[in-house]
Image (tube, rainbow, N blue to C red; front, side, top):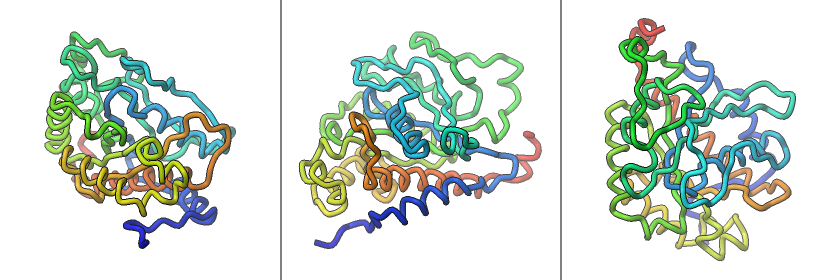
Length: 281
């Protein structure tokens, strides 16, 4: 069967992707690292994605971000996670920003105003969210736009492949409201579809089946139509969770998704007016 997306499952490809990510420089000279914001329901795999990427570059399993499947969000602070190129290595050219999970009921989880403040670069690292009152930027800061360096350059919705069909209309509405906000700010968006191995036995057996099985393809189409994001912007991945060793196929999918995030950030920088950027600096 012909795969519906082509992937080279080789060490050469993994090394190429790692090199491209290491050597990446944002199109904007004023930005040293791309800021990628991860948004999604509780337990979808936002913190696990960071841990997985960190593990790939460390060459061993790591778990810096608290991850788990607690019913309510384990991440209650806004966290920005830089990733280093190996233990003694220099920081890589991106930062993964982790938010509280989107809870079903309003009054819990992340508020749309909080997300708006994060997107515009007003929320500091380790800010603790309060579900009852949205973030209040201090007056002085809020009146001047944040620098391009502090803003979010790409938004990634992290969605569990096993739960797409079970997504409540409440959650869909919340995601739609967020997407609208992100659109008005002109920030590129994509979907990271996690837990593909749990969703499909063929993929659990061999990750290389991911673009051969029609089941994953239908899931990608379903999440695309539910979230209003093009199919080409939906990337299925398997985060590391209970593995003790890194695995080539897993690495290739994770790195491909990260590379795509950097490409999308470049699309954002392409559209930024250099004059506006100079004014803000």
